[in-house]
Length: 309
Image (cartoon, rainbow, N blue to C red; front, side):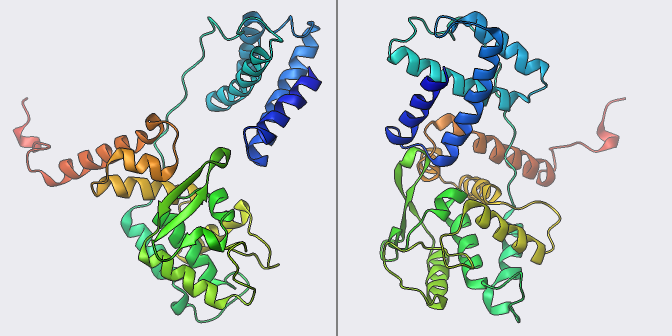
């Protein structure tokens, strides 16, 4: 089985253009599954059937694996099983007739427009009096923040941008998302100006193929580096709550819907494959609408003295 797993992972990387991070996640999930399979002492591939899948589900449950993590692990195994089917190594789908638990749908955490403004005010480069060790590159950090909020990009997408991916004339950014799928996302005038201001502070060449955001070693920033920038910005604004690239992505989508943008457009900008993934932001907006209604409408909640006794 181990040899087939390696071939499957190579297929993900080479043929399907999965990112190194995604391939590592698949590897971890499938290595854990292979260890379970080997402990059962089953022949391969004959032992790949629905009874094994059910046993593995039970095993993960007994281990106390959280539901969404369990579903991710099972999804990896399912993709591997589909690959085995496509290569005729097994004749039946081992996931047929297997009931899988539903995914927990947690409401995304996002910032209010006021909180976004507070972050902007506390971290504007022209207000930074001294460049201490924690805030050495204010123009870069502010440009990262503005682009995250303006375009709703993932941290890996921000890290992967080259200078040539930003079209200052059209106001669009070329992004390579999951599976290296390309999309164009609009960027606001403020974000574009912040990128220009940042590039003006950079001593290195500004060729189209150069990484857009550089770390202190003048090499491409990583996704973790992007997240660290936002943590520092949140501390500077004296935020108690956690701020990360994904919370800005959630804020981008929620604020667009709150201000009248249609769901299909938000889906395209976020790079979601399925509209269902984007629909969770509709629920967030409806929750906000209900909150505003109950706070503002005089008939939303009756006075205590009006209630029947």
